[in-house]
Amino acid sequence: MLESSSPVSAHHIAVELCAFLQTQLKFPHLLDAQARLEELGVDSFSLMELMLFVEQRYGRAIPLELLTPENVCTLETLSSCIASVLENENSTLVS
Image (cartoon, rainbow, N blue to C red):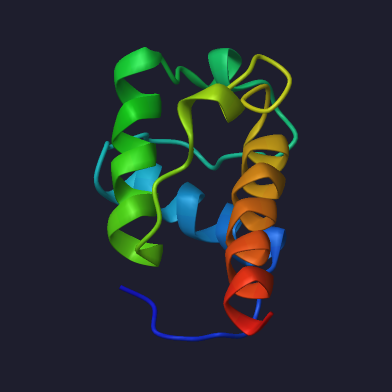
């Protein structure tokens, strides 16, 4: 788990998600963060694996209600959603 109170950028999260997909879920090709997840071969099982990875890595579960089609369209949109959740948690802790 990442131990830091500084915000994690969406870009950094996207890089980590790409690495996870390639190393743990064995996606064989380079991943484009702007490509649609379904085009990359990410199915509902892979998405849940990604969410478990995020929870283990950052110590925070992403609320299911945020896993909308708009937020899980691409790795870029998913990473932005995750970064927003983590940022909101950090700002709540500081307040």
